[in-house]
Length: 141
Length: 421
Image 1 (cartoon, each protein chain N blue to C red):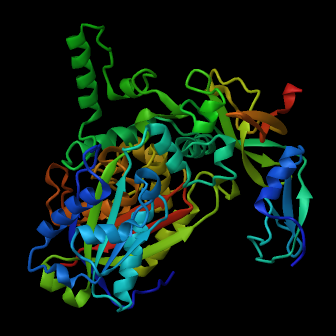
Image 2: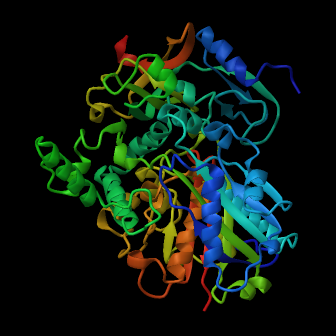
Image 3: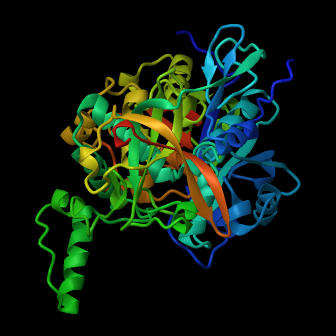
């Protein structure tokens, strides 16, 4: 067993610093996102921590009009909906995240395959702020 | 694929369910007592409660819904069965189906000869926002929920992937809802026993009574596409694409094959079982199928020695309309990418080639999550016994399938039942 910090919470500590991490199996090379000790492909327990570029494409999405509680607190509702999706990174693995900077007025126009890159957003939860992984369209910048 | 066989055959000899709906005056234990009494009334021959040796109960989260953990022995006491072994089985919305699976294995193993299977959920005591939070705990609370996902949002994400991949028509989703409401309208245990036409007529009558402008919907589809009548919840899923928040319970009596005739002249037999698991949605190779359900179905078909075309009717986990369409492909009734067309063409209606959710499904019958996988078998029993009333399927019925999913497919469990002549 190596002494890498691959516990689940490491992911969020890295996000606080604007870094998107995962792991690569030292036996078969399979990449996992989020990171994990045990490879889901070859079952090896030897892995290394890797950083992803944060670039990818939109694979699937939804625009939410009836929010989860945390998002309601953050100011979203039926009149101010938000978008979440699954992003396939250029390196291969996928991740769930909020997608910001898109025009949500007509979801028909949102294109699956849109190039995206990661951004870290501040979400206010009650008295506290937390940094959350999100993605935005690459053309936006 | 040659399947595993059960060590001995298992029969269902009685079924029961409470009415599904919103019952502020009832707790979990009251709902289950109602289902258990209904079960007793369904058993044709002699039934002695003392025969029951164990109780397997599906329940997702009474801890959150009623602040009551350790529910199984309490319900066991309330139905007078203490001190039999009792256990609560939790796999989110598949809790009931998994409890059934475990009960089948327990009888097949020879450990028990007569077991009670139950499912119960009492969801409506909490405000809707808290119910939503409780249900969200069936998803990955580290990597899905903080992104902003809700449960409708997760299935909606599968829906956008499906629409894109197959260039599908979202009207197919509305067709599933219209069909399941038309079936549920014929089920007196259903939460919504109203067709969409009934809903339209009700809203028009209300408008006339109030003296406000009467809505102009001419067809069911016009109603379904009206953003005021059927608001968007999570694009592209609207209110009528979602199953409701429900209270309800269901119960089955399972016995070993050799004891079946003691209880009934008309048992139904477990022909196949299968169960599989998966990671969170983003970890999967495909967003347009539920691989765990396909795997569970393959195991069940192999054990039964039959193919999807042998299934006369199925009760599937339509927590959202897209889920029924994907299920109809995962279970092999239609090829990949064809389920939406089949829904539009009416192939899953009672008169179609592959009738799905004659009970009304989760959508119309209601979805008290821990009870749903058990209540599916109540419909199988009714159809097999020719007592499904106005929703009775015509002709000779031999095989039926039930499909119960937890989360977005982290758990899937499939059962095949056989009526022998």
